[in-house]
Amino acid sequence: MTARILDGKKLSAEIRASVKEETAFLREKGIVPGLAVVLVGDDPASKVYVGQKEKGCLEAGFASFLHRLPDSTTQEELLDLIGRLNGDASVHGILVQLPLPRQIDPDTVLAAIRPEKDVDGFHPVNVGRLVAGLPACEPCTPKGILRLLKSTGIPLAGKEAVVIGRSNIVGKPVALMLLAESATVTVCHSRTKDLAEHVRRADILVAAIGKPRFVTADMVKEGAVVVDVGINRLEEGLVGDVDFGPVSEKAAWITPVPGGVGPMTIAMLLENTLEQAKKA
Ligand code: NDP
Image (tube, rainbow, N blue to C red; front, side, top):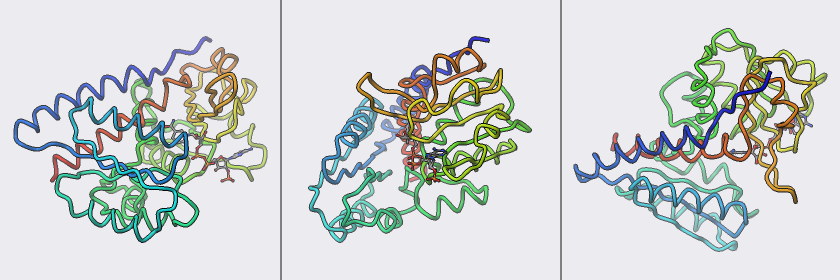
């Protein structure tokens, strides 16, 4: 079998076009969706992500408020800025780009964002709502992954889903969302025994590890849907967590890297911000 490409670039462009259309409609009523992005320090990858987010905002017709703070920023200074953004009616979404410099505790900072403005979905209230199956601001990467999976038209209920990785930003929430869709979910991590055995059962496989070409063809079931979340920067360029060439000979669907999950993350961020602007 040769896999069909699960094209995140194309799907995200469609989503961004519909966000833009809705934004134009809101703007006519005098509401401009506003996203504040806070970047502390000068981590090169973070700068790229923040640049992409700003570009996405401007293209959608949002107001983009970029706050660049020096590496020496104290936690108090950052919390002070978040307090001001929480109270600013023109800001519907607040995103603090991670990682933060060592002197700042990310959990304290994320918990300081008003849950209604937490468009990244990392606030404990939104995490709790996701666990409980209540409407929540959902984290962007997992939300984008679910949207990609649904675009295949394959029902998720009853499927064996295996997630490799249990981080708070990808693995854990994507597992919860798959569970909410009634998949049978297995979460693997660095302490999992016989990982390949688990992965071979997967009808739906989500790889969020951060290790280049970790998932090899012998680990993948014929006809599986494979979502590669990994972004690994090698000399040869960007590489995912899945050995794309050989795995695409076995899978039914596969996301490319780049052009799979990455663009969906930004589209979901815009969608989350738009939703909050509509509520406000
Ligand atoms: P983390 O480093 O936070 O988590 C990695 C997970 O993989 C951990 O749960 C870890 O297990 C597990 N893991 C590591 N090594 C192994 C191993 N040998 N066997 C099994 N499991 C292992 O990463 P993130 O979740 O933040 O990100 C994962 C990847 O996705 C990265 O490449 C990142 O760049 C990318 N990413 C892409 C995004 C996008 O928009 N496309 C957005 C966010 C991330 P343990 O918990 O036991 O340590």
